[in-house]
Length: 93
Image (cartoon, rainbow, N blue to C red):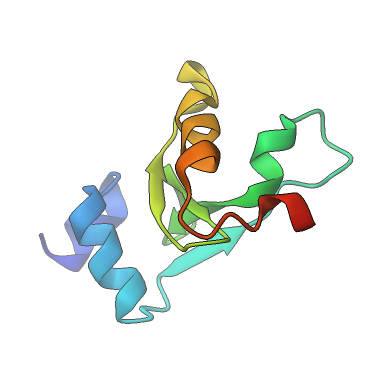
């Protein structure tokens, strides 16, 4: 996928992982504001953006793993990840 295609739509997980590993400046992250009415689960993750376009993934701040997430389908994937996360640092936050 070329750069113009990447700017048009969301990327596959492997493509996004490669960009993150390469510290590509087109990939940015954003935390939810704690004052927003969001799930407590969300506080352990950052939203992933590519060229300022929100992607269908969040990044676990404990183990740096990408988790599939869409607002429409909820936080179930994030909740399952917290239970199985290899770093288990969630209790200290």
